[in-house]
Amino acid sequence: MYVKIHRSADSEVVAVCDKELIGKELSSGELHLKVSGLFYKGELKDKREVKIILKEAKSINLVGKESVGIGIELGLVDKENVIMFKDIPYAQALVL
Image 1 (cartoon, rainbow, N blue to C red):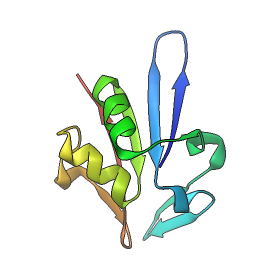
Image 2 (cartoon, one colour; image 1 turned 135 degrees about the horizontal axis):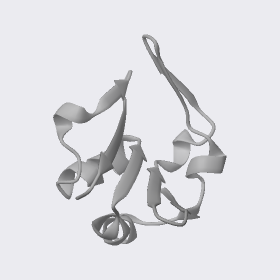
Image 3 (spheres, one colour; image 1 turned 60 degrees about the horizontal axis):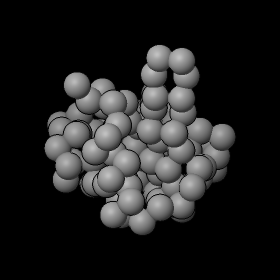
Image 4 (cartoon, rainbow, N blue to C red; image 1 turned 30 degrees about the horizontal axis):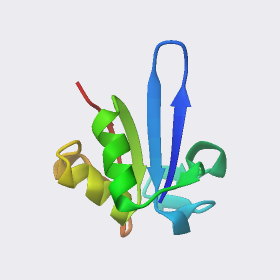
């Protein structure tokens, strides 16, 4: 999975994406998502590393079965809040 951390003066967003989805454009009805390398393509990490990073994150953006699955497994994402682009899940969460 790719992990890219976007930092600004007062916030941080952790973007995690299944490797094979970079560059894809996803659609579901009126919803569209471009899985941009600029936003998602950071460092390649394994599942263990992704879990460590997500446990510390305050804002997350996940796309792909493996990435969203980890978010659900860690209790950061509720299944009911996952958006499906055909068979590809997408989720955002603020962790308080």
